[in-house]
Amino acid sequence: MDMPYFDMLEGLSPWWWVAFGIALGAIEMVTLSFFLIWPGLAALLMAVILPFAPDMPGEIQVALFAMLSVILTLVGRALMARFGDGGEPVSGLNQRSTQLVGRRAKVISFTGSEGTVEIDGMQWRATGPDGVVPEGSLVTITAADGMMLTVEAPAQT
Image (cartoon, rainbow, N blue to C red; front, side, top):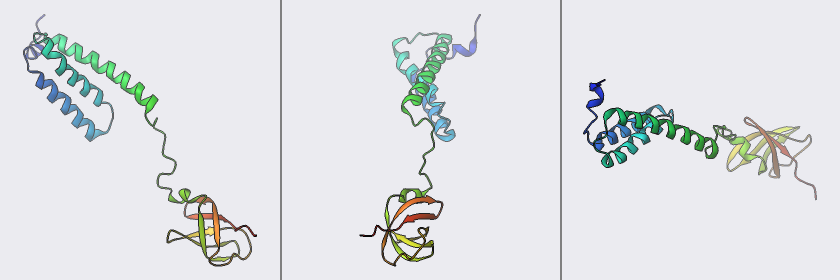
């Protein structure tokens, strides 16, 4: 059975496969699906293979491209699952206060169990031990919840 749409691939320059691979890569960059990169790489591989078999029929080119796409997709996904980030969320992203736990802060004011502390020139609301915490003393940040820090009073020596 003669398929005229595959006949156009016969004798076609390998640069068309390069262009197709680049086009798939460009679509990948726009969609961020991380799926089209593998067929794009398969198209680039076709451009490498085609000069070694310039008389390859169009049906074989399409079949080989499809097989390479499936193989590269499966291998690529497996490698990303093993060595990629695994899709796990970054725990400290957009939570600046959690990065402050364990650091020391200077007391600006403290009354009862609430007050204000300063770290790197920024003032933060804080809760801590009941009692008087003198201004200027250093406290240790033990926890953070949103914009509220929990501090521990300085050790008495």
